Length: 386
Image (spheres, rainbow, N blue to C red):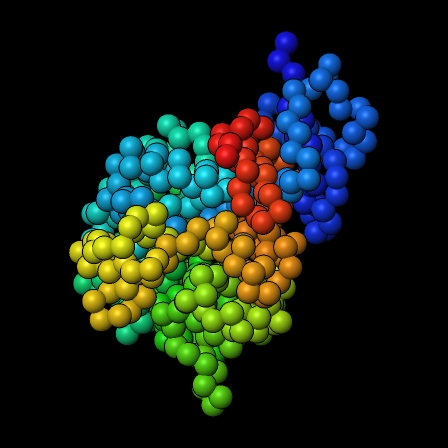
Protein backbone atom coordinates (compact mmCIF):
# COMPACT_ATOMS: atom_id res chain seq x y z
CA UNK A 1 0.00 0.00 0.00
CA UNK A 2 1.31 3.45 -0.92
CA UNK A 3 2.31 5.51 2.10
CA UNK A 4 1.14 9.07 2.64
CA UNK A 5 3.76 11.74 1.95
CA UNK A 6 5.17 13.78 4.84
CA UNK A 7 6.98 17.03 4.07
CA UNK A 8 9.07 18.26 6.99
CA UNK A 9 10.33 21.82 7.31
CA UNK A 10 9.45 25.27 8.62
CA UNK A 11 5.79 25.56 7.74
CA UNK A 12 4.32 28.89 6.66
CA UNK A 13 0.98 29.03 8.46
CA UNK A 14 -2.09 31.09 7.64
CA UNK A 15 -1.44 33.50 10.53
CA UNK A 16 2.03 34.23 9.13
CA UNK A 17 3.86 32.17 11.74
CA UNK A 18 6.64 29.94 10.43
CA UNK A 19 6.95 26.85 12.65
CA UNK A 20 8.82 23.56 12.43
CA UNK A 21 6.48 20.73 11.55
CA UNK A 22 5.21 18.37 8.89
CA UNK A 23 2.57 18.60 6.20
CA UNK A 24 0.90 15.26 5.46
CA UNK A 25 -0.73 14.70 2.08
CA UNK A 26 -3.14 11.93 1.14
CA UNK A 27 -4.62 11.57 -2.34
CA UNK A 28 -3.59 15.10 -3.27
CA UNK A 29 -5.13 16.74 -0.18
CA UNK A 30 -3.52 17.98 3.02
CA UNK A 31 -4.71 15.41 5.54
CA UNK A 32 -2.85 16.85 8.53
CA UNK A 33 -0.45 19.54 9.69
CA UNK A 34 1.48 18.38 12.74
CA UNK A 35 4.18 19.82 14.95
CA UNK A 36 4.86 16.54 16.75
CA UNK A 37 7.63 15.10 14.62
CA UNK A 38 7.97 12.06 16.88
CA UNK A 39 4.99 10.57 15.06
CA UNK A 40 6.60 11.03 11.63
CA UNK A 41 8.40 7.77 10.95
CA UNK A 42 9.22 5.98 7.73
CA UNK A 43 7.06 3.11 8.91
CA UNK A 44 4.00 5.26 8.34
CA UNK A 45 5.06 7.88 5.78
CA UNK A 46 7.22 8.53 2.79
CA UNK A 47 9.29 11.32 4.32
CA UNK A 48 10.72 14.35 2.52
CA UNK A 49 12.84 16.23 5.03
CA UNK A 50 13.60 19.79 4.01
CA UNK A 51 15.27 20.64 7.33
CA UNK A 52 15.41 24.42 7.75
CA UNK A 53 13.68 25.29 4.47
CA UNK A 54 10.28 27.00 4.40
CA UNK A 55 7.28 24.99 3.22
CA UNK A 56 4.78 27.43 1.75
CA UNK A 57 1.53 27.25 -0.20
CA UNK A 58 2.30 27.31 -3.91
CA UNK A 59 2.40 30.64 -5.66
CA UNK A 60 -0.65 31.58 -7.75
CA UNK A 61 -0.15 33.91 -10.73
CA UNK A 62 -3.43 35.44 -11.86
CA UNK A 63 -1.85 37.64 -14.57
CA UNK A 64 0.68 35.98 -16.87
CA UNK A 65 0.81 36.20 -20.67
CA UNK A 66 3.58 33.71 -21.39
CA UNK A 67 7.30 33.17 -21.54
CA UNK A 68 10.13 31.13 -23.02
CA UNK A 69 9.12 32.06 -26.54
CA UNK A 70 5.38 31.44 -26.17
CA UNK A 71 2.34 33.64 -25.56
CA UNK A 72 -1.06 32.24 -24.59
CA UNK A 73 -2.66 34.30 -27.36
CA UNK A 74 -1.08 32.11 -30.05
CA UNK A 75 0.43 29.12 -28.23
CA UNK A 76 -0.68 25.59 -29.04
CA UNK A 77 -1.07 22.99 -26.29
CA UNK A 78 2.62 22.10 -26.52
CA UNK A 79 3.57 25.75 -26.05
CA UNK A 80 1.31 25.99 -23.01
CA UNK A 81 3.05 22.94 -21.56
CA UNK A 82 6.45 24.59 -22.09
CA UNK A 83 5.30 27.67 -20.17
CA UNK A 84 3.84 25.50 -17.42
CA UNK A 85 6.98 23.38 -17.01
CA UNK A 86 9.05 26.52 -16.53
CA UNK A 87 6.57 28.01 -14.08
CA UNK A 88 7.09 25.02 -11.80
CA UNK A 89 10.76 25.99 -11.51
CA UNK A 90 9.62 29.35 -10.16
CA UNK A 91 7.18 28.03 -7.55
CA UNK A 92 3.95 28.62 -9.45
CA UNK A 93 1.51 25.80 -8.72
CA UNK A 94 -1.58 27.47 -10.16
CA UNK A 95 -2.12 30.22 -12.72
CA UNK A 96 -4.55 32.03 -15.01
CA UNK A 97 -3.31 32.13 -18.62
CA UNK A 98 -3.90 35.75 -19.55
CA UNK A 99 -4.96 36.89 -23.00
CA UNK A 100 -4.25 40.44 -24.13
CA UNK A 101 -6.22 42.29 -26.81
CA UNK A 102 -6.60 40.45 -30.12
CA UNK A 103 -9.29 39.97 -32.77
CA UNK A 104 -12.34 38.32 -31.22
CA UNK A 105 -11.99 35.15 -33.32
CA UNK A 106 -8.39 34.80 -32.14
CA UNK A 107 -9.44 35.29 -28.52
CA UNK A 108 -12.05 32.56 -28.82
CA UNK A 109 -9.59 30.20 -30.53
CA UNK A 110 -7.03 30.84 -27.78
CA UNK A 111 -9.63 30.22 -25.09
CA UNK A 112 -10.51 26.87 -26.66
CA UNK A 113 -6.83 25.91 -26.86
CA UNK A 114 -6.33 26.69 -23.18
CA UNK A 115 -9.42 24.67 -22.26
CA UNK A 116 -7.97 21.72 -24.19
CA UNK A 117 -4.70 22.11 -22.30
CA UNK A 118 -6.47 21.95 -18.92
CA UNK A 119 -7.22 18.23 -19.30
CA UNK A 120 -3.68 17.46 -20.45
CA UNK A 121 -1.74 19.56 -17.95
CA UNK A 122 -1.40 18.21 -14.44
CA UNK A 123 1.31 20.49 -13.08
CA UNK A 124 1.03 23.36 -12.47
CA UNK A 125 -2.74 23.75 -12.52
CA UNK A 126 -4.63 26.05 -14.86
CA UNK A 127 -7.18 27.67 -12.54
CA UNK A 128 -9.10 29.52 -15.24
CA UNK A 129 -8.53 32.22 -17.86
CA UNK A 130 -7.88 35.94 -17.47
CA UNK A 131 -8.86 38.41 -20.21
CA UNK A 132 -7.01 41.73 -20.26
CA UNK A 133 -9.47 43.45 -22.54
CA UNK A 134 -10.61 43.97 -25.22
CA UNK A 135 -12.97 46.60 -23.69
CA UNK A 136 -10.36 49.12 -22.57
CA UNK A 137 -9.50 52.78 -23.09
CA UNK A 138 -7.19 53.37 -26.06
CA UNK A 139 -5.77 56.45 -24.33
CA UNK A 140 -4.30 54.08 -21.74
CA UNK A 141 -3.32 51.21 -24.04
CA UNK A 142 0.09 50.80 -22.40
CA UNK A 143 1.87 47.90 -24.08
CA UNK A 144 -1.28 46.61 -25.81
CA UNK A 145 -2.16 46.86 -29.49
CA UNK A 146 -4.91 49.48 -29.75
CA UNK A 147 -6.02 48.06 -33.10
CA UNK A 148 -7.76 45.37 -31.07
CA UNK A 149 -9.22 47.52 -28.28
CA UNK A 150 -13.01 47.68 -28.61
CA UNK A 151 -15.81 49.80 -27.24
CA UNK A 152 -17.94 47.83 -24.75
CA UNK A 153 -20.23 45.47 -26.63
CA UNK A 154 -22.55 43.14 -24.72
CA UNK A 155 -23.08 40.91 -27.77
CA UNK A 156 -19.35 40.27 -28.20
CA UNK A 157 -18.92 39.66 -24.48
CA UNK A 158 -21.76 37.13 -24.40
CA UNK A 159 -20.26 35.32 -27.39
CA UNK A 160 -16.89 35.09 -25.63
CA UNK A 161 -18.51 33.89 -22.40
CA UNK A 162 -20.50 31.23 -24.25
CA UNK A 163 -17.39 29.81 -25.90
CA UNK A 164 -15.39 29.90 -22.65
CA UNK A 165 -17.59 27.31 -20.90
CA UNK A 166 -17.14 28.97 -17.53
CA UNK A 167 -13.33 29.03 -17.61
CA UNK A 168 -13.00 32.82 -17.61
CA UNK A 169 -12.33 33.87 -14.00
CA UNK A 170 -11.33 37.52 -14.44
CA UNK A 171 -11.69 40.25 -17.03
CA UNK A 172 -10.19 43.72 -17.15
CA UNK A 173 -12.40 46.56 -18.39
CA UNK A 174 -12.09 50.34 -18.48
CA UNK A 175 -15.17 51.29 -16.41
CA UNK A 176 -15.48 54.84 -17.78
CA UNK A 177 -16.19 53.68 -21.35
CA UNK A 178 -19.78 53.98 -22.54
CA UNK A 179 -21.55 50.67 -21.96
CA UNK A 180 -18.94 49.33 -19.50
CA UNK A 181 -21.34 49.22 -16.57
CA UNK A 182 -23.61 46.83 -18.48
CA UNK A 183 -20.62 44.57 -19.15
CA UNK A 184 -19.69 44.59 -15.46
CA UNK A 185 -23.19 43.43 -14.55
CA UNK A 186 -23.07 40.65 -17.17
CA UNK A 187 -19.68 39.47 -15.91
CA UNK A 188 -20.88 39.36 -12.31
CA UNK A 189 -23.98 37.41 -13.36
CA UNK A 190 -21.63 34.87 -14.96
CA UNK A 191 -19.40 34.61 -11.87
CA UNK A 192 -16.49 36.38 -13.53
CA UNK A 193 -14.41 38.70 -11.36
CA UNK A 194 -14.05 42.21 -12.79
CA UNK A 195 -10.85 44.24 -12.68
CA UNK A 196 -10.44 47.85 -13.74
CA UNK A 197 -7.43 48.68 -15.86
CA UNK A 198 -6.08 50.51 -18.90
CA UNK A 199 -8.35 53.26 -17.73
CA UNK A 200 -8.86 57.02 -17.33
CA UNK A 201 -11.58 56.50 -14.72
CA UNK A 202 -12.19 59.29 -12.24
CA UNK A 203 -12.33 58.80 -8.50
CA UNK A 204 -16.13 59.12 -8.60
CA UNK A 205 -16.56 56.64 -11.45
CA UNK A 206 -14.33 54.11 -9.71
CA UNK A 207 -16.27 54.35 -6.46
CA UNK A 208 -19.51 53.84 -8.39
CA UNK A 209 -18.41 50.69 -10.23
CA UNK A 210 -17.04 49.12 -7.06
CA UNK A 211 -20.69 48.92 -6.01
CA UNK A 212 -21.56 47.18 -9.30
CA UNK A 213 -18.88 44.54 -8.86
CA UNK A 214 -15.40 45.73 -9.81
CA UNK A 215 -13.19 44.20 -7.13
CA UNK A 216 -9.61 44.52 -8.37
CA UNK A 217 -7.23 46.91 -10.10
CA UNK A 218 -5.05 45.53 -12.89
CA UNK A 219 -1.34 46.37 -12.32
CA UNK A 220 -2.05 49.49 -10.29
CA UNK A 221 -0.28 52.72 -11.39
CA UNK A 222 0.46 51.25 -14.82
CA UNK A 223 -1.70 52.16 -17.85
CA UNK A 224 -4.08 54.32 -15.84
CA UNK A 225 -4.72 57.93 -14.97
CA UNK A 226 -2.10 59.08 -12.43
CA UNK A 227 -2.87 60.66 -9.06
CA UNK A 228 -3.25 64.44 -8.99
CA UNK A 229 -3.92 66.31 -5.77
CA UNK A 230 -7.01 67.97 -7.29
CA UNK A 231 -8.03 65.01 -9.43
CA UNK A 232 -7.42 61.86 -7.35
CA UNK A 233 -8.57 59.34 -9.96
CA UNK A 234 -9.00 55.59 -9.76
CA UNK A 235 -5.64 54.94 -8.08
CA UNK A 236 -6.58 56.98 -5.01
CA UNK A 237 -9.96 55.26 -4.79
CA UNK A 238 -8.35 51.81 -4.91
CA UNK A 239 -5.82 52.65 -2.22
CA UNK A 240 -8.49 54.02 0.11
CA UNK A 241 -11.19 51.40 -0.50
CA UNK A 242 -10.23 48.57 1.85
CA UNK A 243 -12.19 45.84 0.04
CA UNK A 244 -10.61 46.47 -3.38
CA UNK A 245 -7.57 44.38 -4.23
CA UNK A 246 -4.70 45.68 -6.33
CA UNK A 247 -2.17 43.90 -8.53
CA UNK A 248 1.46 44.98 -8.32
CA UNK A 249 4.37 44.12 -10.59
CA UNK A 250 7.29 44.10 -8.15
CA UNK A 251 10.20 44.31 -10.57
CA UNK A 252 11.37 47.72 -9.34
CA UNK A 253 10.65 49.12 -12.81
CA UNK A 254 6.87 49.26 -13.13
CA UNK A 255 6.58 50.68 -9.60
CA UNK A 256 9.45 52.26 -7.67
CA UNK A 257 10.13 50.60 -4.29
CA UNK A 258 9.09 53.70 -2.24
CA UNK A 259 5.70 53.62 -3.97
CA UNK A 260 5.41 49.92 -3.16
CA UNK A 261 5.96 50.90 0.47
CA UNK A 262 3.18 53.46 0.13
CA UNK A 263 0.79 50.77 -1.14
CA UNK A 264 1.71 48.50 1.79
CA UNK A 265 1.09 51.33 4.21
CA UNK A 266 -2.46 51.79 2.89
CA UNK A 267 -3.56 48.29 1.91
CA UNK A 268 -3.73 45.06 3.88
CA UNK A 269 -1.40 42.46 2.26
CA UNK A 270 -4.44 40.22 1.81
CA UNK A 271 -5.68 42.77 -0.73
CA UNK A 272 -2.38 43.10 -2.57
CA UNK A 273 -1.73 40.54 -5.29
CA UNK A 274 1.74 39.97 -6.69
CA UNK A 275 1.55 39.28 -10.42
CA UNK A 276 4.22 38.67 -13.02
CA UNK A 277 2.52 40.12 -16.12
CA UNK A 278 5.27 38.15 -17.85
CA UNK A 279 5.38 38.07 -21.65
CA UNK A 280 6.78 35.87 -24.40
CA UNK A 281 10.31 37.23 -23.93
CA UNK A 282 10.50 36.06 -20.30
CA UNK A 283 13.40 33.66 -19.88
CA UNK A 284 14.96 34.63 -23.22
CA UNK A 285 18.07 36.59 -24.13
CA UNK A 286 18.07 40.27 -25.08
CA UNK A 287 16.64 40.86 -28.53
CA UNK A 288 13.52 41.77 -30.52
CA UNK A 289 10.33 39.81 -30.13
CA UNK A 290 6.71 40.12 -31.22
CA UNK A 291 3.47 40.23 -29.27
CA UNK A 292 0.00 40.88 -30.73
CA UNK A 293 1.62 42.29 -33.89
CA UNK A 294 3.79 44.67 -31.84
CA UNK A 295 7.58 44.69 -31.75
CA UNK A 296 9.01 44.16 -28.28
CA UNK A 297 12.57 45.14 -27.41
CA UNK A 298 14.16 43.23 -24.53
CA UNK A 299 17.27 44.66 -22.91
CA UNK A 300 18.53 43.86 -19.42
CA UNK A 301 15.23 42.07 -18.74
CA UNK A 302 13.22 45.25 -19.48
CA UNK A 303 10.64 44.86 -22.25
CA UNK A 304 9.55 47.96 -24.17
CA UNK A 305 7.79 48.95 -27.36
CA UNK A 306 9.71 50.93 -29.99
CA UNK A 307 8.55 54.19 -28.36
CA UNK A 308 9.90 53.13 -24.95
CA UNK A 309 6.54 52.15 -23.41
CA UNK A 310 6.82 49.28 -20.96
CA UNK A 311 5.37 46.11 -22.49
CA UNK A 312 4.75 43.73 -19.63
CA UNK A 313 7.49 42.27 -17.49
CA UNK A 314 9.97 39.42 -17.55
CA UNK A 315 9.95 38.60 -13.84
CA UNK A 316 8.10 35.69 -12.22
CA UNK A 317 6.48 35.35 -8.82
CA UNK A 318 9.57 34.01 -7.06
CA UNK A 319 11.42 37.11 -8.30
CA UNK A 320 8.58 39.30 -7.06
CA UNK A 321 8.56 37.75 -3.58
CA UNK A 322 12.33 38.13 -3.25
CA UNK A 323 12.16 41.72 -4.50
CA UNK A 324 9.52 42.68 -1.96
CA UNK A 325 11.83 41.45 0.80
CA UNK A 326 15.09 42.77 -0.71
CA UNK A 327 13.55 46.19 -1.38
CA UNK A 328 12.60 46.20 2.32
CA UNK A 329 9.00 46.82 1.36
CA UNK A 330 7.63 44.02 3.56
CA UNK A 331 8.77 41.02 5.58
CA UNK A 332 8.93 37.46 4.29
CA UNK A 333 5.53 36.57 5.71
CA UNK A 334 3.68 39.37 3.94
CA UNK A 335 5.62 38.83 0.72
CA UNK A 336 4.59 35.17 0.61
CA UNK A 337 1.02 36.02 1.57
CA UNK A 338 0.72 38.37 -1.43
CA UNK A 339 1.66 35.51 -3.80
CA UNK A 340 -0.46 32.82 -2.16
CA UNK A 341 -3.35 33.84 0.10
CA UNK A 342 -4.20 37.09 -1.71
CA UNK A 343 -4.68 35.63 -5.22
CA UNK A 344 -6.61 32.66 -3.80
CA UNK A 345 -8.84 35.07 -1.93
CA UNK A 346 -9.49 37.13 -5.05
CA UNK A 347 -10.34 33.98 -7.03
CA UNK A 348 -12.64 32.79 -4.20
CA UNK A 349 -10.56 29.63 -3.90
CA UNK A 350 -9.61 29.89 -0.23
CA UNK A 351 -11.54 26.71 0.43
CA UNK A 352 -8.88 24.80 -1.51
CA UNK A 353 -5.82 27.00 -1.94
CA UNK A 354 -3.78 29.86 -0.56
CA UNK A 355 -2.78 28.43 2.82
CA UNK A 356 -1.55 25.23 4.44
CA UNK A 357 -4.55 23.77 6.23
CA UNK A 358 -6.17 20.38 6.58
CA UNK A 359 -8.54 19.65 3.68
CA UNK A 360 -6.88 21.98 1.19
CA UNK A 361 -5.05 20.98 -1.97
CA UNK A 362 -1.51 19.78 -1.29
CA UNK A 363 -0.02 22.32 -3.72
CA UNK A 364 3.13 23.41 -1.94
CA UNK A 365 6.57 24.86 -2.54
CA UNK A 366 9.82 24.59 -0.64
CA UNK A 367 11.96 27.73 -0.26
CA UNK A 368 15.52 28.08 0.97
CA UNK A 369 16.58 30.92 3.25
CA UNK A 370 17.11 33.19 0.24
CA UNK A 371 13.58 32.42 -1.02
CA UNK A 372 14.86 30.37 -3.96
CA UNK A 373 12.68 27.48 -5.09
CA UNK A 374 13.91 24.10 -3.83
CA UNK A 375 10.84 22.07 -4.85
CA UNK A 376 7.32 22.46 -6.23
CA UNK A 377 4.72 19.96 -5.05
CA UNK A 378 1.45 19.42 -6.90
CA UNK A 379 -1.34 17.38 -5.31
CA UNK A 380 1.13 16.02 -2.78
CA UNK A 381 3.65 14.82 -5.34
CA UNK A 382 6.99 16.44 -6.15
CA UNK A 383 6.66 17.94 -9.64
CA UNK A 384 9.94 19.86 -9.63
CA UNK A 385 13.06 19.55 -7.50
CA UNK A 386 16.12 21.75 -7.69
